[in-house]
Amino acid sequence: MTDVSLPEVVRIARDLIRFDTSNFGGGNAKGEREAADYVGAYLQDLGLEVEYYEPIPRRTNVMARVPGRDRSKPALVVHGHLDVVPAMAEDWTVDPFAGVVKDGMLWGRGAVDMKNMNAMILTAVGDLLRAGEQPERDLVLAFFADEENGGVEGSALVVQNRPEWFEGATEAISEVGGYSITVDDRRAYLLQVGEKALIWIRLVAKGRAGHGSRLHDDNAVTKLAEAVAALGGTRWPLRLTPTTEALLQGLSDLTGRSVDDPDALAAAAGPAEAFLRSSFRTTTNPTALSAGYKHNVIPERAEALIDVRVIPGTEDDVLAELQQIVGDEIEIQTVVRDIGMETPFDGELVEAMVASLGRHDPGVPVIPYLLGAGTDNKALAYLGITGYGFAPLRLPADLDFTGMFHGVDERVPVESLVFGQRVLADLLRTY
Image (cartoon, rainbow, N blue to C red; front, side, top):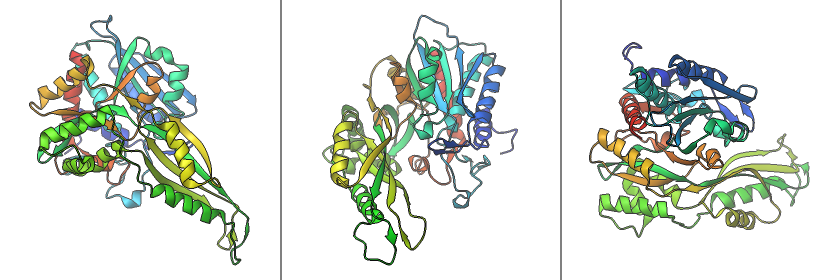
């Protein structure tokens, strides 16, 4: 497609991808300022008053409030994050920050997580305002920094220092929900009504430094390696919640298979299987190692990062068990800890989201699920705002969409973005 023929939602998502907002974590990030300025300019062109909050240089958050027809109703927060995880260009088929459109898809870091949804938010609101319409209720449009680092330098600071942005809001929608999966050749949509708790930990092993040629029984690297292998190899038991039980029942209704074996039932969801299975149990994945400075020097300290995602309500029990698994010689440092959440699959907003999908893809079931990862909805929860994942996308059956979160060759179909824009505009117009 030529630039002129691209739908607006695709052009905006492409433009946002071209801002390299890579977030390496721990305060090491390129920053969201240019992307925030782009979003702010778009909102200003729609006649909205835009506010920025940059508590740390270049870590920019942006907000605008859209007046609704019925301002007596609680406001709805519609939010996204502007940062992305890094991409190693040599591993990709295309330049990850070029915003390439080919084979009917938009490619690039953020095409799935979550510059696609940012573009859908902007264009859905644009559709309403340019047509002289208003949303049903006030909308708080927020675009955060630092979500890929747990929101420490983004939504957490916004909630703490700019709570007035969200005055009158009781509910929120954002990423990682509302997308379709294919279950035994039948399409269904997943609506995210909860998130596992997030605990990022650092394992620290200490030993005696020495020459690499010696017999050495106090080696920090060996201790750390054993602890990492123990955690990475732990298969945590199934622990279902009301949401995952409802998910399994929905999958069972579609397939006729029993709910007695959740892992086997999740396999019916094809590429989404791993995403769903991770919601049935705690996970402990090693993600980084650091030790030593020369080939023949045994270091006195070795460290590892572990990404722990916990079934809501079990956080303290899991932390205690982690120490048992790695042993008393390993120090566990908590780097980031955030809450888990779970909300019933009912209420007016849930009904409105289901109805909006139904108007654009009639007869396709919508099933609740618990996200194995996390979103900025966690930060908003501290203000009493209930968050959902609703970035509606109708996807091809053979596309491993969930596998592209933080993956290589991230991409989203052009027609899926157009679908999402229309569904989202429908929701904002009617709820």
